[in-house]
Image 1 (cartoon, rainbow over the protein chains, first blue to last red):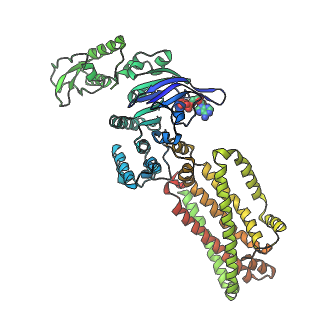
Image 2 (image 1 turned 135 degrees about the horizontal axis):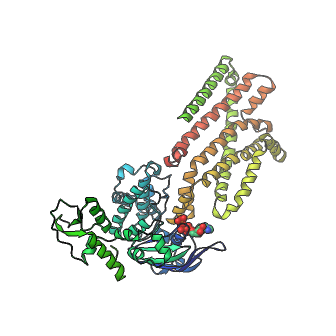
Image 3 (image 1 turned 120 degrees about the horizontal axis):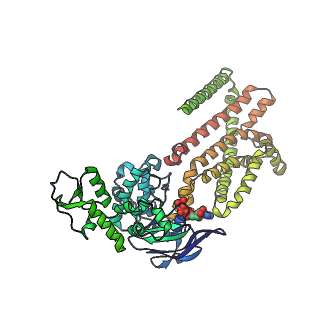
Length: 329
Length: 243
Ligand SMILES: Nc1ncnc2c1ncn2[C@@H]1O[C@H](COP(=O)(O)OP(=O)(O)OP(=O)(O)O)[C@@H](O)[C@H]1O
Ligand SMILES: [Mg+2]
């Protein structure tokens, strides 16, 4: 849906912010642009909706060069969220959320209905917040409003520049989870800037890791973690990359390759986890309960087997050796 | 909290001072001249208000659009030049502007309007400029990114968020203008300044006060009215106390 074709951006005479980057963002996918400060993530993002010009190369949106498209119309088709949420202080929450529908000339009733739908999506009471102003909301609430504002006109694509960067870690996790839940329903095509590897692993279907304007690796989170393309990538993902990669594998995926162990020990004595838990949580539970294994239960809370350290270890070794791309959930 | 206490103390002192002034005025029957010459008073008051209204209106009509123009990306490089000229204009004493205008245009109502107009431009221009420039660039950025057209960015984002500062500038300019209009008498512009200067010349406090007191009341009333307007016009989220 969004295709970068050898895109270069040079600011002024000689600041090369983006250097011949090519990558495709498929429909319904979240691609995270990841990398250290100043590596060109924001620049790369802002070239899509024409907030920065493209020096060389081209960007295609739905197969058409963005240079051939009407800039204003293009922007209204692409939701845009920035770190400091960019809510308009002079407008109340309803006006903020429905600002693009207003530009598009929606009727009052349609806007009202849409506002209520969106507020429900993020679990905020429409009546309570309608007439409030941005400064009367907490940081987390403001950020949620920023996100639903970008969704208001139901754009097929979204550009998000460190949308949750200003939030403290606990709130950030919650907003991330909430956003992923929304995305599972809406299937937007999303470019998401982050400088946080954990956020990238969690949010991304794919990660584009950048350094000094160049694309270092473009791959699924598990591939980036297990098969870093070069030293920079390995260093960026950190020494604990195997532990990190545990978070993107769930018991269900392990069950596709291995039989669960027999549940010989009575339920109740050892910890119980659902089969949709990730492997990092599994290990935490095993350590916590000071036992050798955990019970795995299905949706109906019935014990279907056990997982222990050795099985997780086996699975991870297997993955790394097979060198085979693991499809991210 | 502390700031509030100071504000209130100052306010109380000002109002007590005003009250003392009124008591002094009434106990000396200084308003007799006004009462006895009520017809003339109405004429002078009307002239005064006309001078203020016309010159303020012209100043707003010139200063606000100028400030908007020099903050557009295309014209930004002129901002320095325009600001310097306007600021320089304000360093000339208003008496000198009056004299200058009289040299060019002769005496009369129009000359007074032009002189007052010139003197009112700066506070409005400067506040409009500051208001627009203080609008967070992130807001403009996200407005652009959402597909606002340039005029929509101006009217829906920049001006509403600068409104407080713009109206404050207008308020300052108009209130100063009401006082400065007393000088219009010197160039035959009319207004309540007539009585003030006649009162000074013939050492008659009653004539002087009959001119000065209505000017003060007019300034206070207009100030109050513009504060009310500001409350009505400026959205709650765009007032400085909420930033
Ligand atoms: N308007 C500009 N003019 C000149 N140079 C710029 C401009 N904007 C960005 N740059 C430079 O381009 C490079 C990439 O900037 P960019 O904002 O894309 O980085 P980033 O990866 O988003 O960084 P961060 O994580 O700090 O937001 C930096 O070296 C920056 O100094
Ligand atoms: Mg950035």
